[in-house]
Image (cartoon, rainbow, N blue to C red; front, side, top):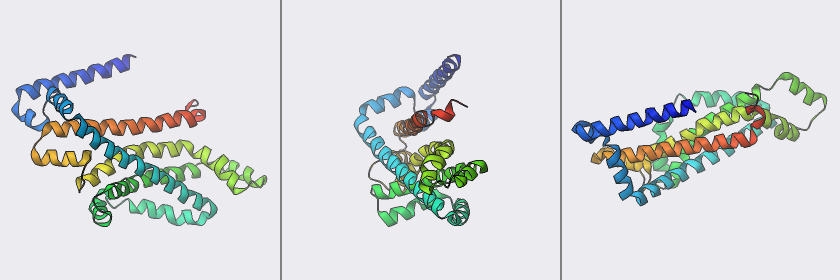
Length: 248
């Protein structure tokens, strides 16, 4: 309770400081506006801003879901053909030397300026953390577990759904938490390179037109969207991961 009150006081102090300098300093006003003007701008343009937020949220959520299913599919394939893991994982790690955000223009050219290119970018940003965390969670399963499954000659399907997935769940959730924010980043970066609507387009236009109210409103909505996705994964963890959350 004391910690929450402390954070609230810090937040109020920062907002008050922002309001003061935004009202008295022209440079600050041009760069980041002020809380009062930002709230007024939001009230006047709430329809367009919520529409942009909805589009970016749709792109991020769909991208996260596709990346999750694709990561699970690759891992299940690796369970059936363990040698694939030896080749896939190093390739996945090596691929991260490429700054993924620079591929956004490629997706725009390949898939157009519609939702597909934004979802594809979100998928690309999300896939690696989910897959690698899942793989590391599987590798962390003790040898005694594998030996016990071998002694009882447990079918592979039983091992996957009743042992590998549950015991890897903490690592999977960790990957999903990382990817929940990366999905928003991927969608916004793709929108920067070309979009009809979205928070990324708003941020791009605000820099071009020097509209600090549009920029700050879009930044706040982007932060809220990322936090909402992160909290959604936390809620899923509380439902399915109570068995290990209580131990920690």
